[in-house]
Length: 384
Ligand SMILES: *Cc1c(COP(=O)(O)O)cnc(C)c1O
Image 1 (tube, rainbow, N blue to C red):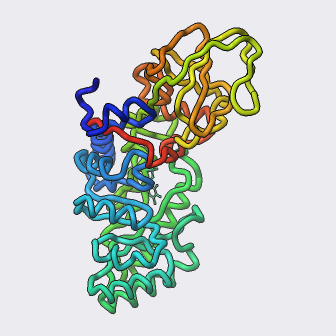
Image 2 (image 1 turned 45 degrees about the vertical axis):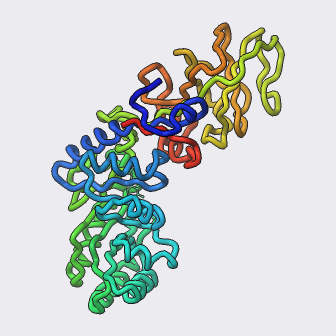
Image 3 (image 1 turned 30 degrees about the horizontal axis):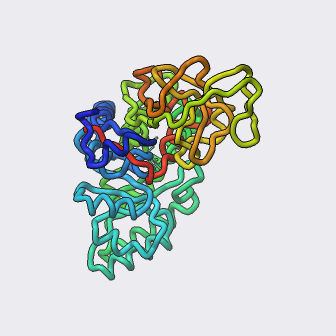
């Protein structure tokens, strides 16, 4: 079928619901961000299974596109990258499992730190392993998520400075994260930038001088050159997604196509109900196609209410009734698809299918949620 697909099980996988990942698009998108960053190194953010695209293949594709570091949330993902032979620096900014610190330090995984107690636990692990831990101090500049708030920053910096003396840690970075960088001009952006500059200045004046100051995510790279500092972190863009509306697709190409196949086709007569609760009744005699994809595959249950349409035989058809756990029904009207015909749930939009961004918009969410919810257990086919 598709000679580009290299996967021992590709033919079998292609018969059912699966995601195709366009690795060339991830490389090209990364290169686009490298160029947008204007010489500042780019950390490829591959948390949550690379936003659902598959951790290791996506990371390799980002590397080919010019990324020079990786960012993940949890340590386990960093260790998976190491086991796959990736040697570039990796930051795990959500090191929740203290039991993993020793392994992280042994594998040269850099760790985010937002509080003195965590710093102490990491320094102890470093001492145990006989290796130096590389840490990034996180300042909460206004989002109230990770990081130390302004009041506690002084304490964190002081404990970092004191710990430095013990020789078990290096403060590699200071970082923060924007709440609203996808809305250029939002007043919070300037406030966060100012708070970040002050936090960095405070640390440096206290004798904690990081090699890398970093605050920008994808939207900031695209709109805020003054926020680049020493490193930018990009996730969304690598997968071809952009949430800054005014920029359109920002020259990026969506990397995931979610596909399935028609399983059953049948005629139903006017008035017949469809799926749990019989919330849909066919207004006229019609044809329905049953697709083997459901909310366990990441297709949200209320997709029909949101007006989501899937592509079958080059035409979009509405989901009718609620989405089931494993199955979904389309009203294909006067069309007559055959079992095994290809279904495109979303993709880059080339053939008329919804893009992830359109899909997310209909469901009242962000594209990242749509792709990140595709379970790791759903087969993926990686196209080089
Ligand atoms: C998710 C995340 C990013 C990437 O953000 P994008 O908008 O996807 O580029 C960067 N930094 C941190 C701390 C994050 O949690």
